[in-house]
Length: 436
Image (cartoon, rainbow, N blue to C red):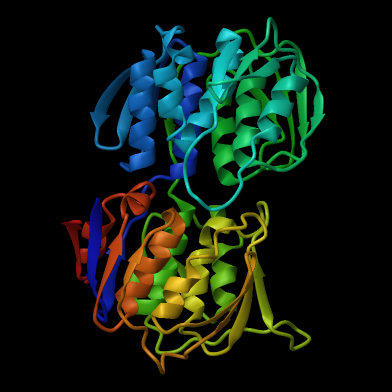
């Protein structure tokens, strides 16, 4: 197991560029299974979750060519159908959250799939009902196989239909879209997720010959086609990493420019930081965060305490609540964070409390942060990263703390952030990767 050793208190200054979007990469790479032709994808982030998915696709028989760093071509012409029903395949899927996105394409193209419960972050229950119900609406049958803890999904033919999703699940919507593009007739998906990742997936599928309309809304119409062809696609900058850098710049920055940012794709993210008093300047295709000696939490118009809560897009992504919470520990004022979607995501705050942060964990979903206003510096400590986003939040806290901190289980951070210690070192951070 590897760890980060961080010497805190050094200001960060300079320019940093975001990687390609992790969540988009997992979706569009799986979409390559929908055709036997070559699909080239650029700006793929070099992170653990994506690399493991690519390795799994290779095991399935997908030809993978690395054209350049972050640039791959996929050709799924000779899929090993026996392998995707094997125990080895099931075991690998169960350790990789992104594997869930393969089952819509496999069902669409080969009319069967064996679906294992995927792994990933330990942030609470992440049910798969939306995926199964969507497949069922399209005409697929599924049954649980006792003793293997898997579901077998089969369909002689997928048929388009109208469906109202029980929740706006991002991965559920992506899976249903990919199953629908090769179905007979027209599929209408209401209450669809409409995150930028989903929009990018739809644009890529349309460039492959799909007929999807309503993109960027929660009402999608998909006219099924007989076959898809190859394409070239470029992944957007990762809005979660952009948000992480904004938080880092506010806490420990001495002027940081985040370049190559598609600001229009960030939605409400900049405003969420502004509510904490963070100054954000949009210029030159990027975002500049000046040095903050202090920043003050806003209040609602009626003077009541600020509440920041996650919500489906275009609401605030839950992936940034951990970062916003850490930033609030040094703000002037108090703020209530309400994590509605996952019941275990706020448990990492006990590490921040050990570092001297003033936080009241009200229940698994709510925490009140009383900011230090930079009058009390966080203390260094030893901690363990429980998930990707809490891991980067703890890293930001360690960068601002007095003394030397150690973060164990950094494989969680590696799952979502490419070469993070070297990129931050280039702008002044003191981080060293060590073997535990």
